[in-house]
Length: 258
Image 1 (cartoon, rainbow, N blue to C red):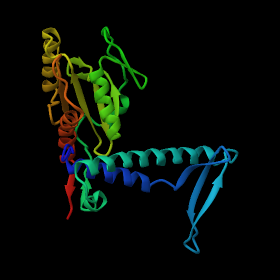
Image 2 (image 1 turned 60 degrees about the vertical axis):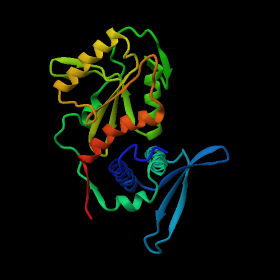
Image 3 (image 1 turned 180 degrees about the vertical axis):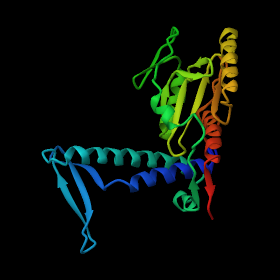
Image 4 (image 1 turned 90 degrees about the horizontal axis):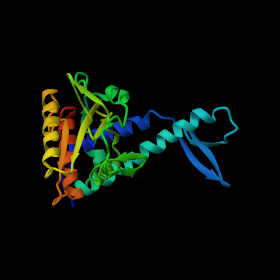
């Protein structure tokens, strides 16, 4: 049991965000009838207060807009399910009840925000890739990077692979850049799998220095997962390392109100 791999504040912040986003959407759900996709639109009757269901086929003019709403609802519910699964694994108890005593104050000053994430383009590193590994449409550089991406997928955290990040006069290519819209922040992950290779290690020392000079600090904004030919961290250890960064960001934006 990975008890406390990620802080309660992170779970709380994400839960508040996801449920708030869901509450903004009209209750439209994807269903299937006789092999066809149909939208079920749930609306409360203004007079009786009863919730009624209206079925909508693709031939209706409202289809396009409501279909997008249904997809968004479906995705938010998927993310909420992943969050609750990890919460149960890490802590247990009622996350909805705990979250009712907190509020989020999103980032307004840190330049590494969700707007920056939206502008970032993936797969910008053009250095030769000697060990290509395909994962979900990405050509990654190692199984270690794939393992890290799988961890983020299990947490329901959106990420981009090998973006180009300019910090001062220097350019770096974080292995994975994550977006945390609940806090209006992004964070960075380096999966350094060949640290017993002196040339590779030296390159990462320079990369580390660039991050520090830009005010991107390990454990606060950056998760650095190290491995070599003799050791690769197990999923629990990787979750704890990434969780330290996630928890640090959450601690800056999630506060008790009672």
